[in-house]
Image (cartoon, rainbow, N blue to C red):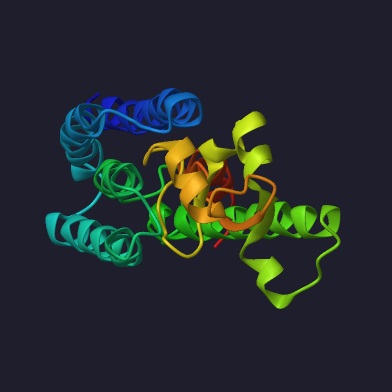
Length: 222
């Protein structure tokens, strides 16, 4: 009975992850910010549930090893956060993942977070290249930097609300946070028709949400 209940909790955790990441992805897209208390509370609940769920299936030392591997796997996210490429929400989201799902309930030996972060990074990079390349083609600019940055007029950033999704390449200011109009005027030196090279600030949580079922399904085959 206890073992059966533990298995049900494992499946519940997967559902919880999808619900939490659906809500936070919406908040990230709409407001470009997710309240930190959501991650703090969810991480605590996730850790407690996962320990209960997997303790009855794996020896304690094996379970601890899986937790350690999961935590160590987010070191890249930690580094990306401290150099300014990912926000604090993305870091906390990774902690939530690592603590809540150290083992794939559907089988496979890899901690799910390894594949989730891998798929998320591939999706984010592909989307980034598509967006920046599209803007370069539209502006008829063909440079190597088009793989990482997009040439957009200051006026277009303001009028089309594109400022929510970009930060200025030179100053690395997040245009959506650091007073959009002031930042754009500063970067364009007062000429809103001037092209500003900007880098996409994509909602990484969306890519994590998409990657969760993909990682659980493919992880079972590995």
